[in-house]
Amino acid sequence: NAGVTQTPKFRVLKTGQSMTLLCAQDMNHEYMYWYRQDPGMGLRLIHYSVGEGTTAKGEVPDGYNVSRLKKQNFLLGLESAAPSQTSVYFCASSFRSGSSTDTQYFGPGTRLTVL
Amino acid sequence: AQSVTQLGSHVSVSEGALVLLRCNYSSSVPPYLFWYVQYPNQGLQLLLKYTSAATLVKGINGFEAEFKKSETSFHLTKPSAHMSDAAEYFCAVRTNRDDKIIFGKGTRLHILP
Image 1 (cartoon, each protein chain N blue to C red):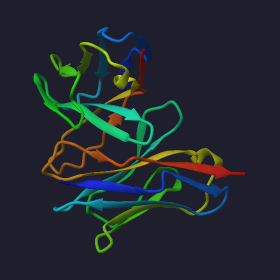
Image 2 (image 1 turned 120 degrees about the vertical axis):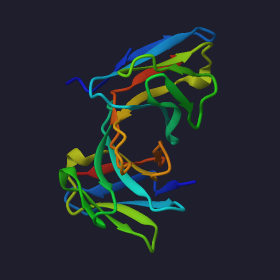
Image 3 (image 1 turned 180 degrees about the vertical axis):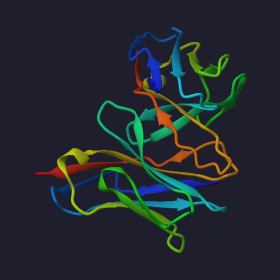
């Protein structure tokens, strides 16, 4: 199993450009998450999905959109990139157990720089 | 709403010394608590989790954490630090009412030779 993979690993954008980050998991997990990590801020949840075809906003959703057309994939889109979106982006996935003690499995991250 | 506070953004310990990373949580309902570790240029991986089965939780790499309800704490410890423990550590909380895990801001652990 590859676990959680993210594409691309690195990207440099100019202000106003758009791009899509792809997250894929092969563990048949129901739940998928997108986080951003900034120095001194920890991980902040952008959007998440509790199943195919469903998405929900997290803590910092502005400027991002997501889609979950297939259970194994979770896409994060930036329609018009801004320098404030320079960050490291992590995708995670998990089962949803009845007792809610699921473990999140993380991808290796995408380092995005917006000039 | 639940939250976690990690005391100390940077902690330095000598190799072989005790590691203590502090985490306090806030939750109006019984929480589930986690410690994750992030090595340089990698994603996060689970160290251990508290699921109400036992207050002392043992994790990977010799780490353990104790849930103390009276102190609303879930501190992470390791008796003897190793150079390979240098990483960033995140405490996290969730409840069974939520689909989300809330992460603390992280503590970077430095190991001194």
